[in-house]
Each structure stands twice: as structure tokens, then as C-alpha cells.
Image 1 (tube, rainbow, N blue to C red):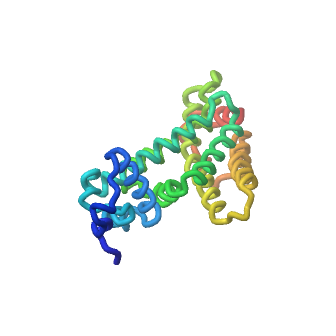
Image 2 (cartoon, rainbow, N blue to C red):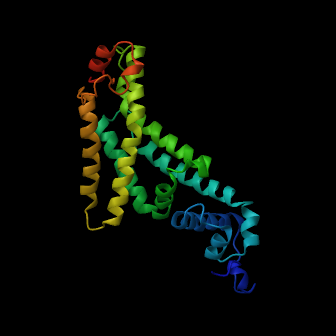
Image 3 (cartoon, rainbow, N blue to C red):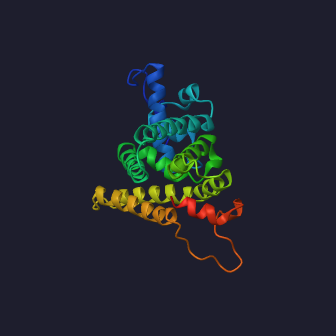
Length: 246
């Protein structure tokens, strides 16, 4: 096992002092890399201190616990990724352009911030390790749900019951959408020989073609006695199905 005191072996004359704000930023960057590579549960404060070449005592001066450190790291990732998504996806764009924009943001983020991407992929399905991850998952879910619902919500012909059917259906689709996007980006990172534009196009096509079938009202016939997904929320199934295709 490595020396858990990290930079304590360095003499005062050789260790460079940093302004507090800059040191904190450095520690967050190192922690992001350690959490991404090791995972939350396997990362200890001594790992971060050693990687940053500082003492544990100095690390604890900035962050009182691993939980606090992880929360700050995740908070910065959440702000960066959701900020990029918000800036890229415009309300006036049609659905396919919105999908393209979201896919492009995810590919850009994975390329620009590989450590942050690794952290997201390792922990997004483990929100129990921190509220920041629940926030990230919820924000991603809301972004994708809005993508599906923006035109439905603006349709004055939809009754509240019919809109409820669309809302319910969108919530069911959201995990499939962002799950497929995240998986495609991760696959592409592991297969650098695949051109990025081809991987992006495949992700957009996969999501769009599936959504297009749903938008036109195409459904698999459910087993006998079972209602189609989402229909239990509507008092008028046939009109809701027709309207959802618009």
C-alpha cells in the first residue's frame, strides 16, 4: 500500500505553497479523478491526499469528510454538464435537432472532461452515494422529458387527461433515452477507431426512430388482458392515442 501521508515526506522547502482558492480547486480536480477511477466506496481521503501530494491534515482543512468532498466534486460536474445541455438545447428547435444537440453535448463532455465522464458513468445509477447524483439524474430526466413533451404541452387540443397520458409515457421513456446515449458515448470512448460522427449519428438515429414510431401511434400489441403502457392514466384511451401521434 502506498504511503498514506501523501506529500508529508516532502520538505517545507520543496513543497510549493498555493493560495487557498487555487489549492481547493486543485484538490477538487484530483478528487474527481480518484473518485472516477476508484469509485466512491473504494476512494479514501488518503488516496486523494497522496495523489495531490499534500498531507491528509491539509486536505481535511479544506474538506471535513469524504462525503463533503464527493458532494463538492459532484456539484461541479452537475453544474457543468447541465449548463452545457441548457445552452445547447433551444426551445425553438424541433425534436430531432434537440436530440442531436444533446448527443453532441454528451460526446463533447466525455472528450473534454474524461475524468468527470467516468465519475458520471460509474455513479449515476448509484444515487444513494450522494444527493448531487440524484440531482444530476433528475435534471437529465427532466431535460429528456421536456424534449418529448414540449409540443404536447403547447397543443390546445389536448385535454388534461390526454396530456397526462403523454406525460406518463414520457417518464417511462426517459431512462431508455439517456441510458442509450450514455452507453453509446462510453462505447465510443472504448473504440477510438470508430469515427465520432458515425457514433453520434447512430445514437440520434436509434433514439429518433424509436420515438418516431411512438409519435405516429405505432405500438406492439400487449398480451391479452394487459393495457398498453401509460393507458391506465387516461379516461379516454382512443382519443389520447390519436392525439399523441400529432
